[in-house]
Image (tube, rainbow, N blue to C red; front, side, top):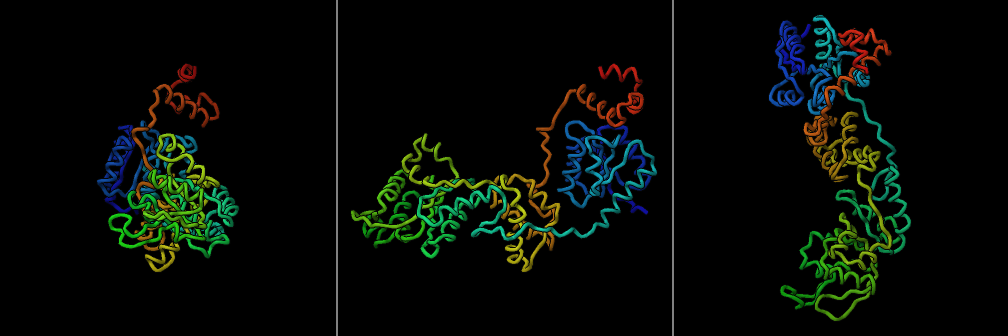
Length: 441
């Protein structure tokens, strides 16, 4: 027996169908809300507690299938019932038969409608515990990095070639791709691992202080120089210095860096003495240094000195097969940190993570997992993920087609469904065979 007084949202651009559905459902003692478009339906979902969504598929601007996908991720506890005129619209029913969504084929009786509504509501009240994800081989770890994709392995292969020599390396990649981890892997997997590894974020140090921090200064060299101090280069002697965000360095610093690379020596600010150093320089940038050279923002000769070996770190969207491994790593790390236990992730939530383009790369993925762990109680579901990761409907980009095009596509689908039988197609379309023949011409 169906529980009474539940709220049902009806979505269809056909007013007559909406009225028919509303009469039937009100007779069954349900509250109903009507929407003639997906945009109107989303507004109702935001403002009202809905217990069941019933939607048509074929609608202008944005179709019902997009609405189903949106609701599936933004309102995962909401059961869905799709009404369709025939079961072959672009294989839609193959998707719906997955068990996530129920469907009802037109025409239907009042009894069939009630059975479909009962099934949709009851099925969501008896959902099984989500299955456990089987993550890929955990041995795909290199240094602090993790991955198995071809793009990841290409980076590893270059690291293997440079880790045991002191060739200058330039690491290029978008923000959040793990450029510092690549630099650490070069240092700590090679034969110089016991030597110092000094990280310098050139973008985080004020321009007027960067030169002093890098090369040191003598007492009295400038106001505030109360004693003599070594710089980062002296601290990294016999080891590796990692210059992150090298593109932000001033021209004065670039000039001095060029001398360090050429002469293998540094001089403190205010001193005429030089000190020989033995330092491997690894630089990193998320900007296009070649474009900076064209605008005189970066020295061409320094660029060529830095790129003895160049490593391009791929963005996460180019190594999506590594996402399950990264997710598992962050689940273990932050599950223990925030909840004192290991957490799981549902297959649907993982599929959302694998679909998203990750403009913020691995750093954005890590932040998303941290948030999801905090919001969940044991298993991360889609509702625990940030809203921007979920399926979105862009109404501005919704496709509009001429009426004749829509009519042609619809006729072709019907003919395909009836295996080319024009008489049956005309019957479904409620036109005579002669009219159908003329439309086909």
